[in-house]
Length: 177
Length: 118
Image 1 (spheres, rainbow over the protein chains, first blue to last red):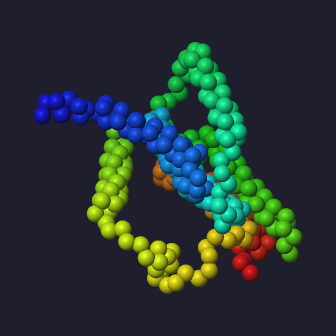
Image 2 (spheres, rainbow over the protein chains, first blue to last red):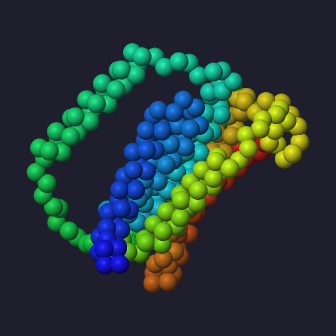
Image 3 (tube, each protein chain N blue to C red):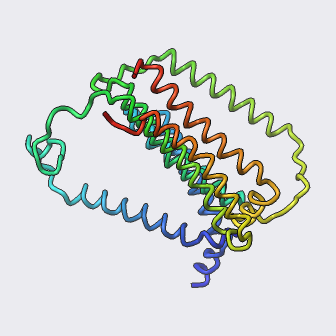
């Protein structure tokens, strides 16, 4: 009994959760890259993005985690599915993997990995002066609607441009009336 | 704080565990008999009509784009909603401007007939 209660501390639970989140991220990323069925790639990306949103929770930014799930998992992955339905000739069998391409991709990503690793090792990490430790949705909402109200309204302008742009491209580009 | 997410953690663990148990059990206990009508794609119990694998029209993509736009709009309601009471009318007018600007886009899109399927 004592051994169990010694293991069941909040600290170990947090560590276990962190390992799970990292595992989800890496597993999803591997599926996203490795699977042969393109829809499985998208599902892997979803899993990976869920993991990333968990990382944001650990970084104490619940709003960004929420955005990650709603926008990236909820909307972007759906948009990717739509894009696949529009473009990929799914009735064709997937072409065999090109060895040279796989090797090139592996070398390229390994290079980036080593570069980022060295960069992380070399950097002197100094903590930024903390303005606040509270980044709850309430705090963000308060800032967004008072001090940064202009940015808040600009977001809607950006969305307006995106919407009109989608229409202009989709309607004009195909010779529709 | 992180302690608030313990229910989510429990939920995740239970969900993954339940799915794993169901998949493993059905794999172990289930009989694997295949016959043509069983291997057919399930389409509400009817024989499938045609092949599902064809290219879809670009209209679906426009709808997907609108979905993303309104999804991003919706997420900004969250921080607004939690401080709505403390902001009072000022917050109300702010959100009205926000929605108003996006409504311009909606009116434009509607006017262009992009929401009609033809």
